[in-house]
Image (cartoon, rainbow, N blue to C red):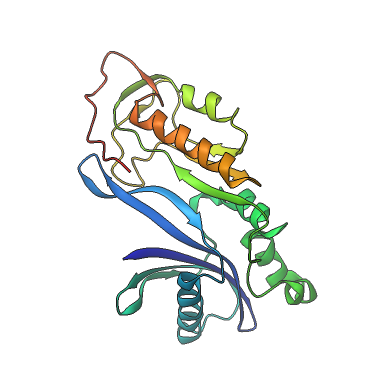
Amino acid sequence: SDWGGVDQVSRDGVHKTMMVWVYERKRANNSQFVLYSILPIDPQSEEAQALIPYAQGVLDVLGVKNGPTHGEVIITDDGPCLVEMNCRANGGDGTWGPLCRALTGGYSQIEASVDAYLDKQAFACLPALPPSPFKANGLQIHLVSYKGGTVKSAPVFDIVEKLPSFVYYETGVKPGTKVVPTIDLVTGCGIVILVHKDPAVLEKDLKFIREMEVKNELFVFEEDELPAGEVVAN
């Protein structure tokens, strides 16, 4: 089953889809559902065409008529199944904002929410769906650590900043932070946003970061380094 997300903004009961996502979860460190990346999907794709009307129907049933929403849905063999519908914007500190603006050519759920509340005409001018195809290629990477310990240094962030597709990173890890092998969102050690016009460049940079994870090159640890956890090949 695929786990999808739908970000929308509404005004007076008119729902506009800002972005549709698929969550890439894999087994790692003896945990079944470690989040590796969040991938934007084309609004005309089969998955999006199943998710969008379902999520908008949920908003109508709940009576949500104004503001941003973030819904999560599992696509099962029997069709979409609701996980949750949040009456707020997508989370993650808004790290997805630059990614969305690159994909759409200039707007995201953040700007659209302001328009929905303050500028009726501007909201009316927003398209009902993101462009197909997207204006760029990109994704949100969730860094997965296979080791743990007290961080001495975090070379990964200086390195990824130099990648051609790098846009933004966010992390709470710094020297002195205690890191454990990643098993969920709480133990995640950072988010990296990659965007590029050329999908080959994006894929190369993504592969490079994943190899850093597997080689345990994200962080240098103090002497209390924990043994490496389970690595599952892609």
